Image 1 (cartoon, rainbow, N blue to C red):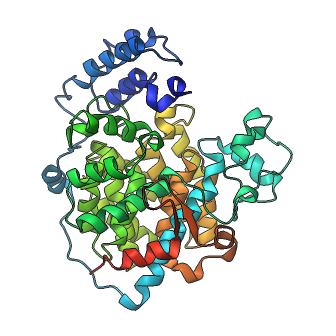
Image 2: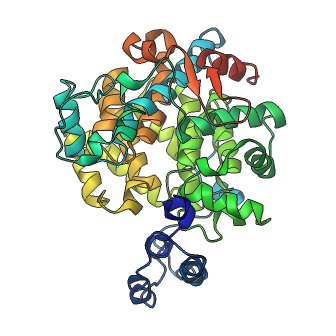
Image 3: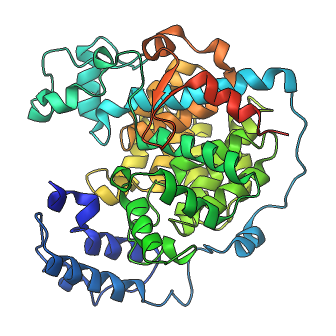
Length: 445
């Protein structure tokens, strides 16, 4: 029901805003008891909504800390000042590009499909399902037609099992926000060109995106668009989710159309991200776009990750935490030990962590490093690590698919979807993935 829909009603917004302000180093001590005493759940009334949002407004207005531990601007010029020095675009193999772009599109779709059945489920839950299917470590799609190994009634919910487990996929990857955004970005660049503005992004969303398909920061920003609160304020006003993962999953296409030019990809991603996010929410999209652009010219995963990091503020939380993943890899520890460290730092049972940019970006980096350029292993790791599994699978799939190209992707990932993707984007309800790759190629110089 609409008045029980979490992302429409915002009944957890005050608690999320409290956590977000705390992450930013703001003093929220005066609000802790007030937020704890709200006791508002679904179904939510208009009076409840205003009560929650008045608290959100107060916390959003809190001053920034006087001596911040991190330097995390949201303005593009200020971000540029905190990046590593910009590098010139690198030459790429034009003859191989079409297969790489096709591979990136397939990677995004198949990675999303792999992770979707266990989105935000625990590592133990994922392991039990995969083991029941003889698929652990995970190297192929998950099946749901196994005896319930979890003891969780959710596993037996027909609505859950009918949508995403591979035996229910009938020749088309179902629509999802992780592929909707990539499809919409293609349409926006086709319409407005590579020099599109943030206002063009807003117009593209208003014209082409059903609002009910949006979640968290995107839902909040869409509401702001309708109230003529435009970028960059749309990414902040009454938006407690402004550092969640929503922008990070939108960066892929901007990497696709800037092969060998990570800084151009990151700048393009910024124009999208600032519509809905701030600080590390923005950096996540820039980081991913830059990595994908670099993946066209390199198969050195560490180099690709470090290139992505060059485009974001060097004193940000995202940079610090991705560096910690690189350090863990250098220690020679096993993948799941590295994942355990991420979960200790960001416990998944707190939704603010489970769908936050930073821990999920850490999982992306870890999956790529420990995956060792093996397509199935890399995607499998991104799901075994839990948190936002469809988002991370899709992002990892884009990068590893760009590196390997479509021709090298195992058939057991591509055969079930028959080159077909469903989306919620106007004019793109059912598309051929190969056609999306061809349309992308036409936008590259």
